[in-house]
Image (cartoon, rainbow, N blue to C red; front, side):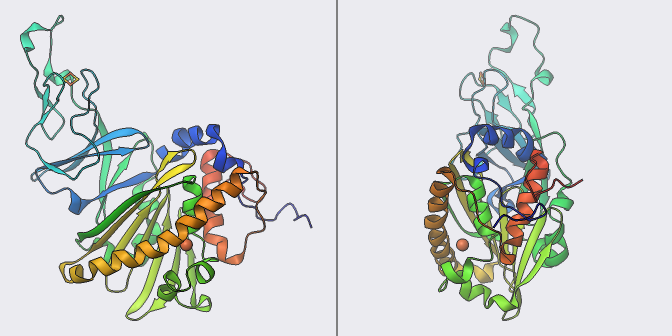
Length: 348
Ligand code: FES
Ligand SMILES: [Fe+2]
């Protein structure tokens, strides 16, 4: 039976397996949002941290008393990274380029260049700072924008600020983390984490036990995010879906888990997990991490299988009521990407 013209549809399979779409996401979708790049607790004062986001080399610095700044991790002289990505934050007073020794402060200003009197043209240090990126703190996270005109961060986080403001404002420690790669387009992984239809079936002994019976699900939708709230001893367990590819889980005792799926290639994404809580949650951390990794491993098999299905040219079936958060994100995605998909009309 063909659905009528107003029926809601999922994104077509081309969105998950087409290189031109992935390029367009880098140009249109990713620059529109703020990216949670690290927990604030992972970057103490007097440290710097090198990361990669969408193949962009990033450098975060935290000068004592001056807050966190973000730069391209790229020496303006000949492009070499000032710090190798992939490790933990390093104690840093000066950033010294390993290639020709140009030396920067944590504010990104060039402080010295080797053999400074011998450049072929007159040389002025002030002309050669590190290139800054917009950087904000919200909740326990550091957010970076890679475009010139990102959505206001408060709009991107509107549901979190409304529904979990108290837990969000609390200073939290990083109690655990995990990072792995998934063999799927980031949207398959993001869709899956927004999908409240599969939890009882696919996670009967893991996530479903935390979220409880489907009849108690409470949904919230805003223009840029979505929420599933489920009753739990002590209050509600809150699961937020946020643009661009981030999820936030909030327990009634104030613990937070952040799960992100930044794209790596067309058919690969990262799965980053940060567990945040207070010192009194510390003894729970190992069990907490293990229990989350259990359900995320259940998801890994499903999302990698779904990717193969989409790649083979699937025309997706009808959306279910419990897939409304997923559909809402696809509507936002279509609007930002300028896609015309039947039933996924771009928002004004
Ligand atoms: S590339 Fe950094 S000093 Fe030359
Ligand atoms: Fe799942």
